[in-house]
Image (cartoon, rainbow, N blue to C red; front, side, top):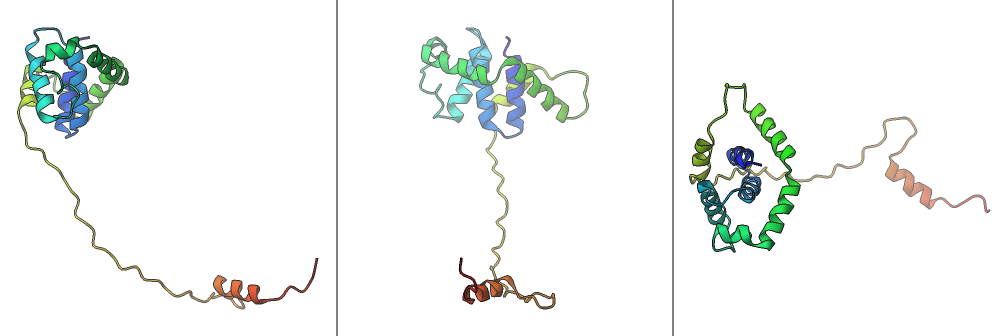
Length: 166
C-alpha cells in the first residue's frame, strides 16, 4: 500500500497536536516506503530529531533500519495496530470534521512540507481552580414529627438493652 494515506493522516494528527499518533503513522509510512524515496529520509530525520528515545533513533540510517529484522518486527506490530482499513476510516473522519468538501485534497508535497517544518510545541494548561475549604455541617434534626436524626437513633439503639433473649 502506498504511504500517502498514512502521511495525510499523520498531517491531520500533527495539526491536532497529537504528536505520539503522528509519530506512529510516520513510522508505518516509513515501513511501506521504497528505497530512494526522498520523503522517507526526511520523515526519519523528523522522528529522530523530535523524539530521541524513539526506537528508530538507535539506527544510523533509514536504510539500515529498514533492513534490521528487529525493526521490521516492530513495524509489523504497528501495522497490525493500524491496518489500512482503520487508517482509511480515520482519514475520512478527520476530513469530515474539517468542514465541507472543497473539491480536492491538498497535494502530498504540500502536506509533507508543512509536516516537516519545525513548529514550537504548544502546551495548553488549564488554570488551577481555587481551593475551597471543606466545612462540615452539623446534622440537622429530622423535620418529621417524632423522628430523630440517624446518628441519634443509632446511639439510642446501642444503649438500649435487649428485652428478649433467644
